[in-house]
Amino acid sequence: MAEPNSQKLKHEQIQYIEFLSKDIVQAKAFYTKCFGWKFTDYGAAYTAFAGDYVDGGFTYGEPVNGTVLVILYTEDIEATKNKVISAGGTIVKDIFSFPGGKRFQFTDLDGYELAVWTE
Image 1 (cartoon, rainbow, N blue to C red):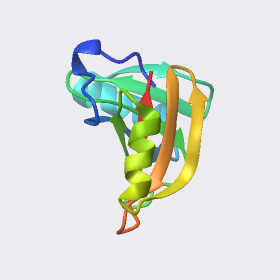
Image 2: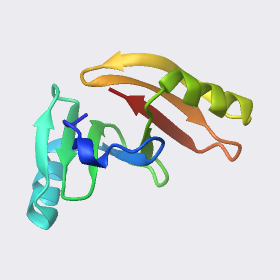
Image 3: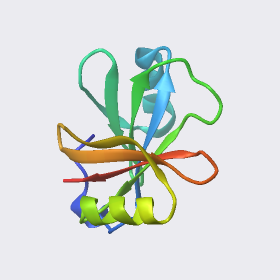
Image 4: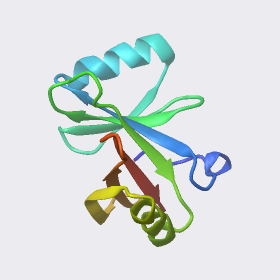
């Protein structure tokens, strides 16, 4: 993930959005031109972006309507994971490390997939 702005880090708020893109270079050019987003590449298959009020990333894949991944920030990843489980959510990717922190992914009761991250 792009380096987060510490003023934006609020417990369990939506923090980051990931998109699938079949052409990351094209996506970067489009969003730079439209919104002035700044990009940081993490290999050929992932780029993170930072805008004035949104951070996110593009990962290589075939875009499908409904595949945007909403990512929430937490101060306590274990406690938030336990709350998701106790509310009936299903963990689909257990806690893992990545450059910048840790995260897990879950589906809600309607089957929507979201993620939670921490530094």
